Amino acid sequence: MKKLQILTLGCSKNRVDSEHLLDLLATQYEIIPETQGGEFEMAEEPDVMLVNTCGFIADAKEESIEVIFEQVERKKRGEIQSLIVFGCLSERYAKDLPELIPEVDAWFGVRDFQPMLHYLGVNQEFEKAGRYQTSPSHYAYLKISEGCDRHCSYCAIPSIRGAHRSVPMEVLEKEARMLVSRGVKELILIAQDTSCYGLDLYRERKLAQLLRNLSQIEDLEWIRIHYSYPDHFPVDAIEEIASNPKICAYMDIPIQHISDGVLSNMRRGVNGEKTRRVIQTLRDKIPGLVLRTTLIVGHPGEGEEEFAELLDFVKEARFERLGAFKYSEEEGTYAAQHLEDTLSDEQKQERLDALMQLQSEISLQFNQSRVGSEEEVLVDDYSDGVWICRSRYESPEVDGEILVGPSSLLPQDMDPYCLIGEKIKVKITGADDYDLIAEFVSLDLD
Image (cartoon, rainbow, N blue to C red; front, side):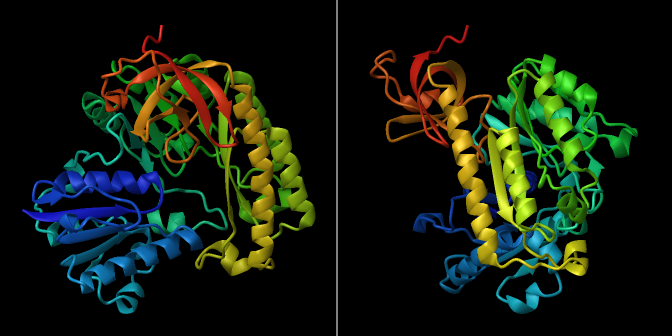
């Protein structure tokens, strides 16, 4: 069998696409596990390299281009025989990229899975694909819908991914049960907007029903929700999160800004007052809720006053988790066509640095508040004598970690890797602005 490898860039939604594709490719190819940064052992040279690209913002596009050129150089050195690129970047620039990078053997867009399978000699239907899991075996992402009906001024996703399309509930339940049967203990629900799940198929928001159905899977222990729009979050889903012990009191709600003027320019359909009300409602109704958000700095209309308002809001809201990025003018978007980008990259970077410095202080205070507490954690990995863990308050890849050192309470001859994927009880003993330090307490979670 020929050897094949996929490098997946960008968000977890791309990862799910890669995993569906790999499930079918594995019938005809030997799959080489993905590594980071394009670095490979000589013995692990694939015959076919696939690159799943991101095309959301400037930094993501630059990373995708860099990785493609790295693989082009490997092809020139004879380390790979065939190079195929697919995903958001090749969808967005389908006309330009083949001329710019002719060394790539084939280009496919975000929905071209069937043509790609045929190109690779796999005569199976993509709709029947299972999952070839590339994340650790104890957690997986479940993509509950594709595309987006919103048209935020800065965002190219609707033009890349198309309109919002929910995955039928029975299909999701089948996929979830299959993943759990393989050992998955945590499912992370993802979409462009999870709060809209079901609107197209069932004419009403069905996130709460989906959560209830998934929580009936016997060996599934945690359910986590990402990427929910702050406007019209379903009330019954809030109630389900608050009352269902399997659902983590953790939500990812990208609000992007708080200034009414900037939000209007962003075409978000929500103002600052409503955003504040949503956040307060969530905190009031879901005990112990941890909130993650994403913000954009330097969007057209953000002057010194609007940025100061954003900083004041972050101090007020005290998000436990926060990510941010600089506005970049994306061709084809409303902002690129109708709004003037007046800030230099240096000014945007200064604002980003100030925002993240403030968030660092807030995150440190939150982490310090947990010192002395005992928490149930899931062991993700083991490295250099330390178990790398997460609680219900941390999502993989985007949040900090809980680092647990050696313990005399564990058998000296125990294989430390046997704890990966297991839950243990730990006591938090130290904190910085990102990670926590803990000591082992017991394997008994009762």
